[in-house]
Image (tube, rainbow, N blue to C red):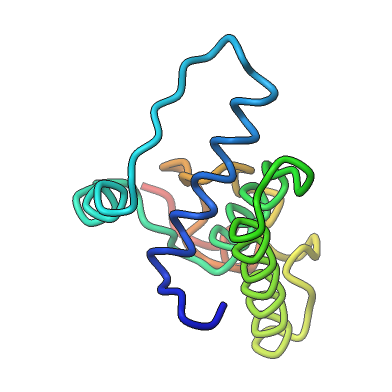
Length: 137
């Protein structure tokens, strides 16, 4: 998206996600912030970071699938299209690095949560073989 910062893209994806959630769950009360408050929240939030490309990829798929194109405005659609490019790029780079698709059963894809925030017990490596061979505490 030319002329749009990463923060603005994330904000548009956040509002698209909230708009779709609100449409499908009208009984829920949602609070939407402005870009400045959202950016401040991103800087202060204390969530577990993604440890692998697989976690990031799966969480971005979750975000993409939570947004219904028919319910969002043009700027949000553009952010969604940019997100699709980011997801494809992660998949391409993974394939170049490991010579397998990121969703292959030899990766830890199946062990990662299908949500935006990773679980604490998710794999810290990309390949299932490496995960199985890691010493456990």
